[in-house]
Image 1: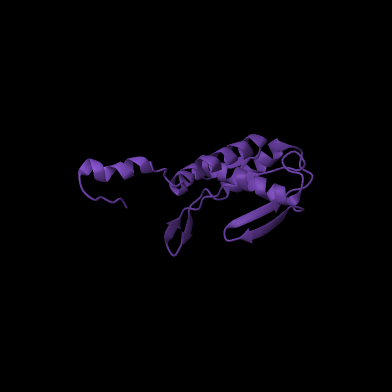
Image 2: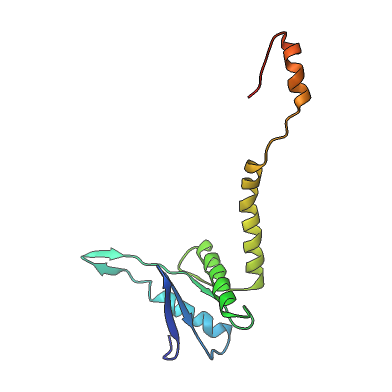
Length: 140
């Protein structure tokens, strides 16, 4: 990172880096690649090698978001896309990612709607069952 860049811990293992006065998406991609490269070597702790991976989501202002909250949200969308592509990667946010994220959410919610929906019962068939069976019958 450069001297004026601000690194902040958002919580847990999530961090945000505020980069001002960048020259374009290529510079941000280069910075993300260099950041990821710092995690490539195995680190030794108590004689054991530890492999650390990272994923990076990148969002720009004003092209990727209009305000700070949207920037963080859209960077998060890009982060999860990078994770889907195989960890230790970065992804630059685009409106297409937001559309894909919304479509995926709808697909994930669809089975829950099916499970919650009450089945429609044809009560006329249930009422005819005792006559067909020749005895009292009930349905649970």
